[in-house]
Image (cartoon, rainbow, N blue to C red; front, side):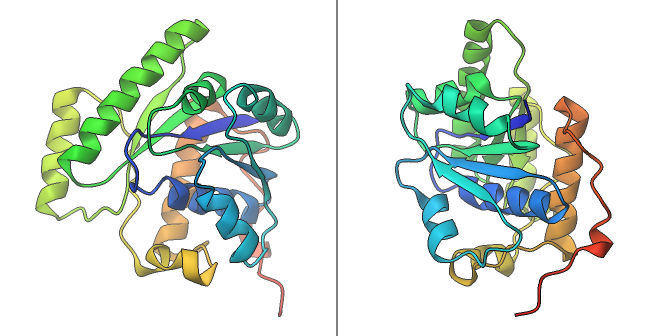
Length: 227
């Protein structure tokens, strides 16, 4: 079975689908078999993939919002891919809980604002409860998103993360125009600062839970096909 990463938060609008796009496209661009399961009833990621995404690199995308089906579906998909990412809804629901239960790792995007962090802390507690039910340790990490390292709100958020004793990944996803407009352009950065950040996050995932066939073939030999 491949690695399963659940992108979760009880707060909507904190970039779960954007993080899913950034990581999955960079995984595929690096030469790995990457899949996404859209477990959000809004279907934002699967709609973007179907209507806007340019199609390169190829991604396997499916939808599953049924709490009674998500575990079996995730196990089936992960058996055919190196990494499967589950994009969950921005509110508490059983499907997200079961996605946590089947995941190798739970990532929780956090914006530089206190409400985002408070909801993240709730999601961490939810993941801890799921770990107890599953009777296994499920790693859970905060992923800083839309981040300006010099911002005052960012510093306050970091202070709160330390105060709440939450574990986070060392790499933050910066605030860039390319990710603000990816839903319109269909283009997800695989180079530059965002591409570098995506690879660093993937390296952190590998160090925490392992990724089959990582490190991947050299990205230098990969390029977009000519139109």
